[in-house]
Length: 195
Image (cartoon, rainbow, N blue to C red; front, side, top):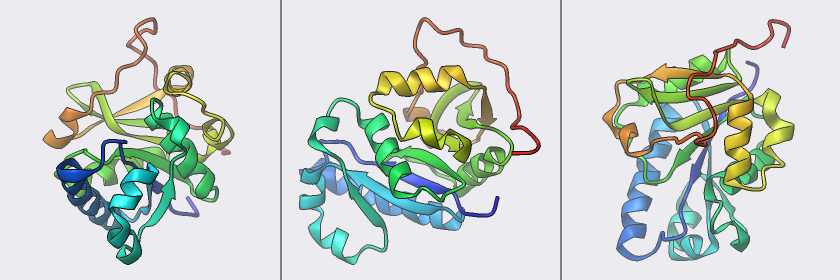
């Protein structure tokens, strides 16, 4: 890969008050892990969170993107779309919820390595898909048109996904639930060698 991948940290809408302080702590920790894993970082947050975190936004080295108000119920897709649009030259993107409690930088390194060979990669624990999830640059045109979390699920069911087993209890709190009508066992396919 000739450019760096970007971690998109998605901040939920209830990021104010005590919850906001805890989330900000997690965001700082996740940013440090991303830097150790050689990833660029975009923090995508609703305007209310950015207002509450004004001082942090001014002093942080992170690139910060504001979510439109219409994204209230479609956080993951809206954050991913906004992050991809802001980093079109990235070799791939990792969607990371702000409240994830990853314990190990090796989780991101394993996912980053797997994304070199696959279109979509998932952190897994005992073969159960979890977040973070990564997307290769080949999916750029589809990612920038995501209009709902449902569309994100459809995209992920359309393409083969590489499950990456990680030894990181922090990812257990973020299961990824494929739509119930889709089969759970999908084949794994590598990217085209000439891609």
